[in-house]
Length: 116
View 1 (cartoon, rainbow, N blue to C red):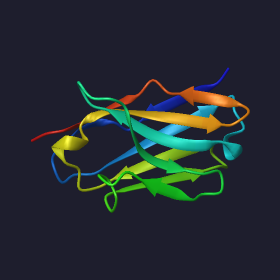
View 2 (cartoon, rainbow, N blue to C red):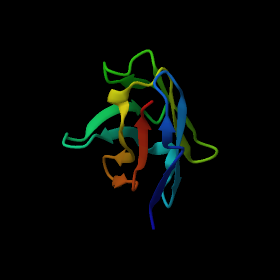
View 3 (cartoon, helix red, strand yellow):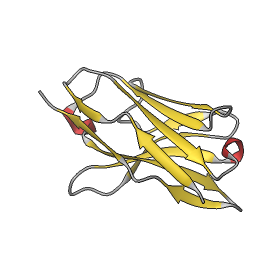
View 4 (cartoon, rainbow, N blue to C red):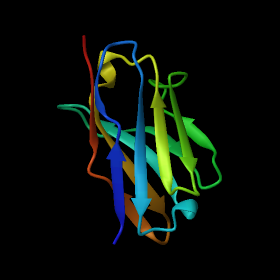
């Protein structure tokens, strides 16, 4: 059974930092392309950052220079380091694992709230 479990969300003040984690089980983590998505109230889910199986990454323009995606294949875990957080970053953040032949999986999400 595939499980993606996000953690690390919470309430943070503007300008603060959080690190999200996504722990995977039931998949060969190292061969999956991994993504962080987010969905704010009343908005569509959007791709925030992605990292390939070999570690190349890309980011939404709105988070470039502030967020860093990484993965530890030995721990089957992906991370999202978020700095200089803004109220517009408030959303539920979702972990996503993709492989062309092996499927597309989602975590349950973790809430990030940026507010003073």
